Image (cartoon, rainbow, N blue to C red; front, side, top):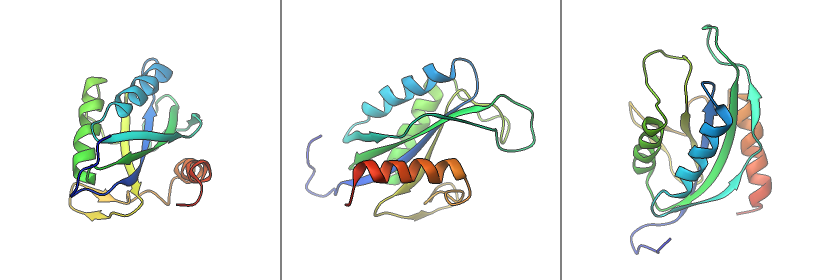
Length: 146
């Protein structure tokens, strides 16, 4: 990753989830795609865990994981990359809380916040989802003091 004079490195925490098709393969493909995002590199990965789906729609359990990405990208630029990866995995946005081949969420950045109508960083549910809290704690323990 080349240093840009006007960009500072930050760490973004991105949640991965899948409950359609080959969930393991979707997460593996997502990790590869995340590692290829320009001006960014994956620096830590949490374990993969199975969780119950959110919402009231009956559906298969999710596989979830979180990664820490050192990046020069702004939250908006990273969101664009994440949505591109989701589309490539066949993600559609038809049903709120519905089944997903791949769901990628920016949970937080270490040093940036966003409060726009279509992007909130930290994610509004960051403190409400036990599995995100566990995965974030795991990543922070792997990364050590920063």
